[in-house]
Image: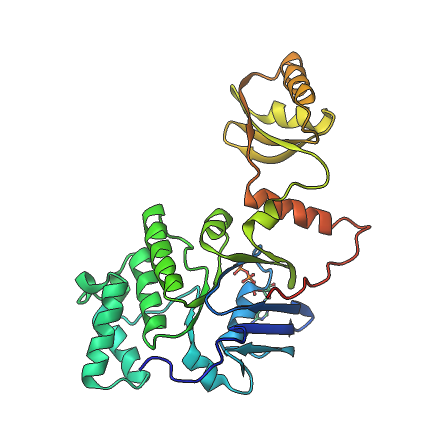
Length: 335
Ligand code: ATP
């Protein structure tokens, strides 16, 4: 019983226009607009509280927008929730299991709820368990699974009706590296099958690898929609990132960076810091290192680093929050 609701594959899979959601005085989603074509994998990125879950819950027909519209496969989420649910697989960030239900019973329960009958149901449950590698765990109690296995069960449940579009809220949160690799592999297969996937995460580097484009949200507003490369383009001011390690405490390095010309601390590391030097001139970079040593910083390692997606995002937010800049305008809808 794959989703039988007709949809036009030439129309975008997800279209959101000027979506707003207010909780009392709080504007959690503040005029969000974007569009995602069929078959695309899009990462939804933003800090805690930026409005990702709220937007996704509205798309999944679990919450109402205060204003604006959202369409899934051409169906308005508020006026046609039942069509939307047939087209959509929803994987929430928190997942409940039932105490006395095994993995197979759990999936069977949801397959029944979705209207699958007898052999078709057994077949679909087996297919989903095979895909998510849960077959060896079929008789394990669903509340006794590891975090990674639980996430695969959650994905399996979302896939039971073979939805065309998947919305996944922080599916990789709390997973160990191996479980993350496994989840990424499953997402890649689903993408190859042509599913449209909107996936939120804090792990930016992983999203960059996995997604065709990234949607950045900050304080309820979309601040960028583009591929990872477009985020990484050099900024207007030339700059170089360097990682510095020191012997002993790094407090002295942080203090030094406060007064050094054209140097700012990007983040602290266990034994040093990542610094931004506002120059790409090698002579200036060498002079900065010389000055650091002359000022008594016990440098044991100093090397240039590639800009990371996280840095690009933080830079962009910093620029947008500069008081003399006007509020960001929603980007044009990508085709
Ligand atoms: P996180 O990465 O922490 O999950 P998020 O980007 O998903 O964050 P949301 O969960 O969408 O953020 O929350 C956006 C804002 O709306 C937050 O300030 C949150 O506290 C608030 N919020 C969300 N749901 C409700 C609610 N039901 N009632 C009141 N405030 C809410």
